[in-house]
Length: 115
Length: 111
Image 1 (tube, rainbow over the protein chains, first blue to last red):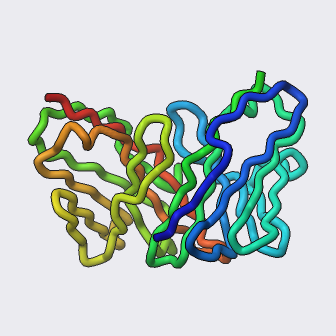
Image 2 (image 1 turned 120 degrees about the horizontal axis):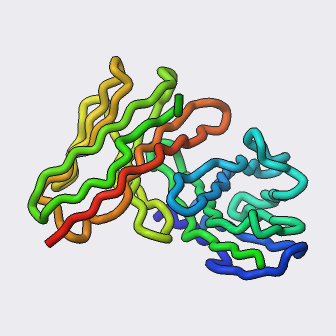
């Protein structure tokens, strides 16, 4: 149980375009999902907390107008990277948990390359 | 100071060796503790939760010392397949139960 599906797994886009990444909890409901970014040889950095039915909470230094988060249902959160630039190229990963005692499950990640 | 600090590694050990990972955390209000494993270019996968009494899962033993704010992971009889980056993760309890990741320690098990 506790499966999180993330799509797409890999995307290449041109500078200036927008990319949407989906994160789904397949066998549990998640009122909260988390979005992380990981640059090569670095650890995961939390970008924002996605809250079902309300606004996302962004970490310091993360531009909310650039990284749009929508959590419209208990099983789906989306992250849209708007007006992408090459420096946005990174590994984006979502996570959710069916309950604190179960730990957190991660999606398989999305490798974004902006050219 | 980072909220979660780990040995920088990498650790390069022969098969069958015992290897220990250490981690310290700065927030005494932290509630939950985990070890995750991350393979190259993959997502982290939960290895084990860490409980105050210490816990064991096969070749893996995790321990927590709340007074010292210290967490450890011991791998016995290491296998080639144990090669990965091991992430110490702490849950900072606030309204959203955020996970704080250590920078990870890379383990290389050689034949």
